[in-house]
Every structure is written in C-alpha cells, then in structure tokens.
Length: 325
Image (cartoon, rainbow, N blue to C red; front, side):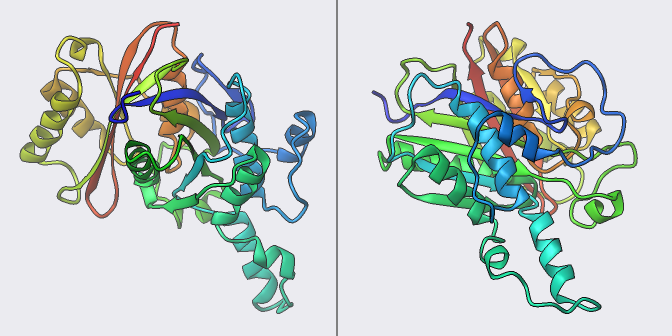
C-alpha cells in the first residue's frame, strides 16, 4: 500500500430529478428550475431508515450515501472517517425554524427540530446509517466546499489516520427562485438543481475504479482570470496531469468559472473543454460531484480536471483518473 496515492473505490448519488445518478449523462437539458425532490417515497422504496426528526437535508444526504454504499462489495470499516461538503447547508429546516419563531407566528421552536437543524447533523445521520464510529466532519465553503472536504480527507488518509474516507456533497434547492439566488447567484439562463453525491476513498488500489490525482485550493485575484492567473492554473494542471494523457484529458468548468476563462484555460493547458454539464444537473455549489460520477462510470479510462472559483477569488482544482471497466 502506497499512502501517498489516493484511490476511489465507489461513487454514487441522486440527481436533481431524484434518480440514481450513474454513468450515462442525461441528454435532455434541465428545462426549468428543479422542484425539490420528493424524498419520502425514495426512502421508503429503498428501505432506508432515517429518524423522524431528521431534516430534509439529512434525508437527501442519506439517499445519496445509500446509492454509493450499494456499489461496495462489503460494508465500510467502522473506523472510516466521514466528510460532508455543502455550499448552502440545511436551508429548508433553517427557513422553517426562522418562520416559526419570528413574527407573525412567534411560536416556540420544536426542541427536536431545533436540535437537528445544524448542517453537521446530516453527516451524523449518514454515519449512523453506514455504521461508522470515527470522525465526522462537515465543511461549508461556498463553491469550493467539495474541494476543501477532499483536501482534508486526503490529508487524513496520507497520514494513515483512517483506513478509508467517505466523502459526500449535498446541496438542496429552495423555491421560488428569488429565495435561492439570495444564497447562491445564478446567471439569467441558468437553472437551479440539487443533489447528494458520495465517494469512497482509500490508499489501497485493489478494486479501485479511479484515482484522485490532485486536489488544490489557492488564492487568486477575484473576478475574471487575467492572463497571469490563467497561466498559473494551466501550470498547475500540467504538473498534475501526465503529458501522455493530457491531450485526452477533459476540463470540467465549475459554476463560478466564467465560460470565456474556461476556453482560455483549456487552450493554455492543452486539454479538451468538456461539454457543459450544468445545463443537465442544474446549478448549485457542489454540482461538479455529479459530473465526477459520470466520468468515473465511463467505459474507458479518462482524466478529468475540474476547476472552479469562489467569490473571494480562491481557485480550486480536482484532478482524477477514471479506470477502464
């Protein structure tokens, strides 16, 4: 076992239409802002036991985790550490509590609902469902929450602090649209979505479906990338992607990366700009996780490079290699 290398052993989740998200991209475009998924029937159909006090956010997290765990040949080691990433957090439960205690209702909040309204409670319920007894960490960091969670998981694995890592990303939508864009800005033509996506990481290569080659987050100038910043990102891609695979590597542009910057970056790095996935998944902070699942389930080996920004100017990059079936 080489602790310096991180392998992906399983992935899975549910997309904005409530279906299990697998390897075949949906050809149809997202026609409008996605309505929140009806989760209760999905939980019942899969016999997933979630406590009654769990929020919708926790239910969404549990459904995605179940889709991933079903693809493992054996249950996770109880010492597996869990990392949950979210850009928006538990929006529905927080909103419900706010409207309950503020005028004109001015009621006393349900103690059980108040106690389970924190973003970290979703990770707790997933860990309970998966039989995990180790550290449970929730990371909320706008558009780069998944990158930050992956960084922490990789650090723990390389330091042999855990046998494997269960990394998830969960974001739920709110309607109408004007409520959503108060928290996460959209371009006029973009539609909102939601999803729960999970990945099992480890340092052993046996049974792996892919390898996580690199994860980075670093400060850059806010706003559109200037030429110097584009060159800097391209250099980091070149350092992470072997030259032999670079011509066939695909750049997945994050929801905060301007389309013009993505084109310039792909040309500068000598990689292919992948087709837009946000028109299919909808736009939310961790939407890239669905595109990563698609890439990992592709029939042939491929290298995927994801680059995104946040409002503070930080740039994040995830590079993974999907193995051939």
